[in-house]
Length: 303
Image: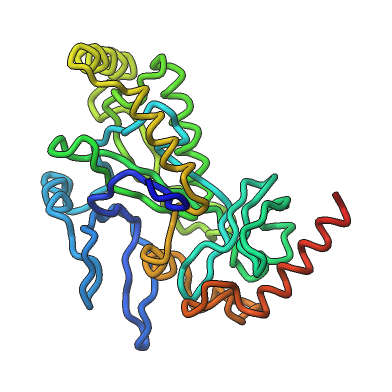
């Protein structure tokens, strides 16, 4: 296994709440009230739709707001990873990833472990550069039970709801999370910040038409079938944990373009428009380096 390379679950496609539209010659993200399932192939007009996108829309009045899914792992944190992430807005590479207590940050001196004060209190997070960032891997089709579709989000509502649901389902199922028949569902809510306009976020529930008890019985039955067939779920979880721990940052420059296009707009630069890095360099730019050094100095004085 190549050291320094995070080994993530194989991805067959993407799930998003929104789309990319062209305005005044610029490609910008636009929120939507439904899911869209795309392949990993992008053309000049955007991401090509996955065949499952049309298949799952049948009988749903053209609005895809629920997707039947299973999970790959029993451990919630393996299915759904969420961090505070500071992105280079040019390449989309992560420069700093933290959990609110500690972070790993790319500096001119290499990778460093530093305190993470969370975006609200971090000097580098001004202008929306650092966002809560979650990645959920789900299995949609039975054709490839180890291949997944990835849902990326920077929304607090989706992150908080998904994290809670996975923990709860793991607990009540007796650690059979990977065997439960579940559903990725779109929900809407209005907040004071949205001025009464609905905002949409992702949730995970038991499969439509099933009660929790029925889903638990189905999960127990599938677990017994897998055990009889020699399917080692605990070994799969261990392999996934080893893969995630093999490197520092889960996302790389190949994913960067999609991250920037989906979650950042021209207004995200705010009062701090200078680049946080450059795709032509393997080290952060001078403005960022100075900020990193200043923050590291402050952190060392307060430790």
